[in-house]
Amino acid sequence: MKIKDRFKERPIMCSVVISLVVGLILIVGENTICMIKGQRYNDLDTDIFIWPFFSIFFVYHFILTFIHIVSLFHIPKDIEWTKIVKRFEYITIVLGFLYTRLYIWLFDIKWNIEWYKQVKGIQLHQPIWTGGKFAFFFFGAIGIMGYVLLSSIKLEKMPPLIIVLSIAAMYIGIIECVIWCIQIFSKKYCLLCLFPLNYIIIAIKTVRYKISEWNTMELHHHYVYEGHPVLNYFSRKLTNATYWPTIAFVLLWPFMGIMICILALFGQTPDIIIKTWTETAEWRLSQQIAPPNLPDGLMMGHYLCTVAAMGHSRIVKPLRMGERHGYPIVVNRQLCIANAFEQIIEERMPLFHKWIRNLYDTYGFPVAKLIRTKGAADVVYFIMKPLEWFFLIVIYLCDTQPEKRIALQYLPKQCIKDS
Image 1 (cartoon, rainbow, N blue to C red):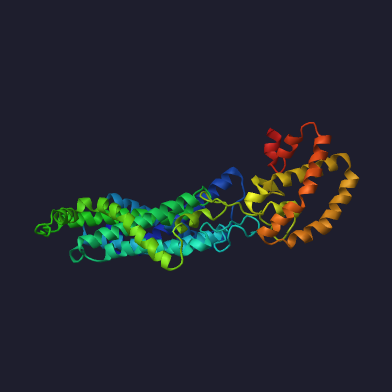
Image 2 (cartoon, rainbow, N blue to C red):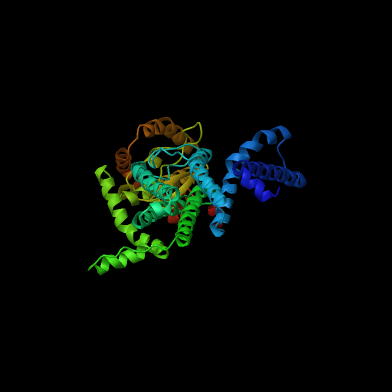
């Protein structure tokens, strides 16, 4: 029996077996390369344990993607093959949600923690704003419903207008997937783009299949409206499958307007579509600056000036992200001046600096722990203003390049060396 026929007979089982074989090859290949280079590699027991999980939860996702890419460019003529492709589409959509949730957990992305709350270590804040999650899932559901409707109901039982509206619904899903990929994309998080990429391929493929199927059916005559040339014109266009993608694109915008009105009934504002992506931190479309991450198991290094930099941006005026103890922090001018002043005291009066640091560690950190809101951080910023001016005077009296010293505060060590 040919491989093609064997795959056709048991497509799901064959795809799983292929993923297991590919996973085994990748693991063995990686360990072989490490052994050749003299690097540390996993022992046999570890490989046997991780092999099936690696194959099913990572490799299989790529196998499904490969299947969809191939079926996008090669329309199956056999009805049985068409059913198999559709089966893989349903599997991809169901597993896609599970895979994405798994990847979010593995990458330590805190899905429910908003940008203004502190996270620990290398954790990241949510890529989708909590207030916009309803709209996000609502538009996602519209896209999935458009696909399910178009792929599951036979064309001869669907009015052309319903077909076009289903395509428009899938366009909404495609737009959301593209924005998600823009928001999330990087080398580290490319796995989170696999499911959206698969949906885009599936949507394009479904439209292509349906147009091909419509053209192979018996000739469709458009209904003639006596005395209504405009209706006759649209009737002719709707019965010509070639125009479906274009008509769907035109209908997409009023369709989106209706969806936004429906969201308004649930208390969602019209700008929710934009805020869903911008009311976040650390991602490509983010417009917020998150507070510095807490070191794992510790709460060190977050003092009054550091906390003050976390207030409202129009008041504390954050300049950039900096680095402290290997962790990113929000830096404003007040914080840079305070740290530059401490640096000068440490250089000129080390014993006095040690006493001041112990005093500040004793009382500054406990007070900083009480500051839990942006308003409280703003108050601390204003309280620290007189000290900031005093620190600045001392810096200008003691340093020949005071502004350079201030600018270098909290930069990565490599940047300081290069300067």
